[in-house]
Each structure stands twice: as structure tokens, then as C-alpha cells.
Image 1 (cartoon, rainbow, N blue to C red):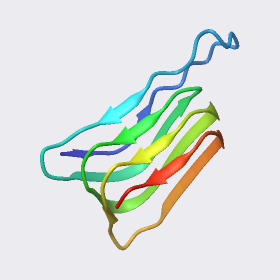
Image 2 (image 1 turned 180 degrees about the vertical axis):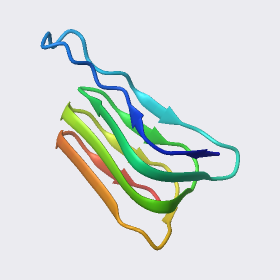
Image 3 (image 1 turned 120 degrees about the horizontal axis):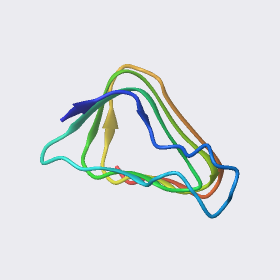
Image 4 (image 1 turned 60 degrees about the vertical axis):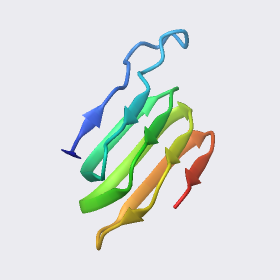
Length: 90
């Protein structure tokens, strides 16, 4: 599976309206580049991640970022969140 920019942010100022969870699953691996962003929610990668170019993963507000397998590639990975955990399992 391959993907690039994903934006699941909400532009509502009402805290009861968070952005959407981003949960990327694949059987073998996930090829990623670009920007993946949400606000006040979680981002999870359920298979090994292969960086095909620079990747930025960002949560504005509270939320967790979970890489549930390895991350490989000769590119930059930037992970940013205001509050929450970042988990690199591989």
C-alpha cells in the first residue's frame, strides 16, 4: 500500500469536534511520504513503514502516534504532537 498527504483535521474551534483518527493498515508494508495530520485524535500505522520520501506526522492537540512495526528508508521522518505519546514498536 502506498499513500502520501492525508489531512484529517477539523477547522472547528469547538473542542467537541476533533479531527478524525487516522489508522493505516496493510498486509505487507506501507510506503509513505508527504504530510499526515489530524487534530485532537490518534494516528496509527499497522504494518512496517517504508519511507519513499520525507514524511511528517503531526497531531495538533492531544493524540497518540503509534508505529506498530518497523520504519525504514533513507529519508527524514518528523513526528510532532502537542500532547500524547509517540510509540515506535519496531
